Length: 369
Figure 1 (cartoon, one colour):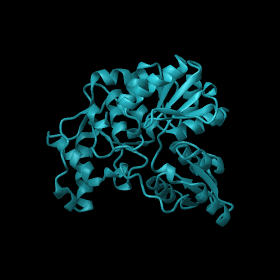
Figure 2 (tube, rainbow, N blue to C red):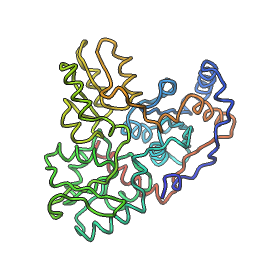
Figure 3 (cartoon, rainbow, N blue to C red):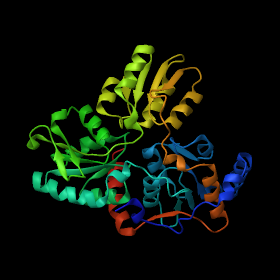
Figure 4 (cartoon, helix red, strand yellow):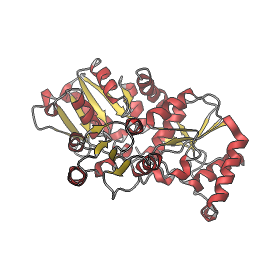
């Protein structure tokens, strides 16, 4: 089932074309006026990967974990205009009260990784894996997944994870069951398990297209089952990119996100979540040099914020996250003016049955962070 099938929303309209004709200054002033009018009744969370034209209006900026925590903690805002992607807005809807309404400025802002694990495939995989391994598996899902996948995990005793807390959650999971099914990003799962001392030969990949376990060794030895999914942005960083930096700027530190492949993480100096990358560079000495392997909007922002350091993208030909970039200033203004005019668009509402089970998975994570 596609992510859009799990959403109920007031409208899924296209933005009127005249918004694209407005000057940037006019849009900025109109957004400011609405923010001032609504005050604490309006909350705009913004993910780190958003464009600067949007992030300038964010009341909270952060990675997935920070925004999930902020959504759960906020009880004042009646309207939450989420500048992120589908799964983030779903999470905000599920963690806030019934009186709070969550909106996504552009319904096309999805996540290719989340779409790599749909609920039908996952339920089929679970049946096959139970036949192979019996009742020895606990499912974990990266928060970059649909509400339906989170609900599946919640029903089966598992939890969500983020790149900030994946090691902690994986350790918790092994206290519950002998084996782990990790959805939907194989790279984060592999890198996290490896950091915990689990050898690669004890990991296997579940291929949802063939409905088969891809395993080089003895399946009975497998304790980490990785869903065959990936981030389309972070998979573009390569060992060749690292070799180029090493040969041209040997004194440069290389720091990457754990959604990169195992080979790239192993060849880098440091790897960690979006927050980790930001914090490490923030704390580094003036004059230090960094090649950063993560989303381009964030890298450019880090470069602008640290003129005393030499910072480059590990892959200078990278594009920003294209789906995240669906959210732009015109769409943000359209969303806010819809609220102000009493005609809100693109409200995100996860059905009660799905939300109940998904919240179990989210709460298990939030209990451990």
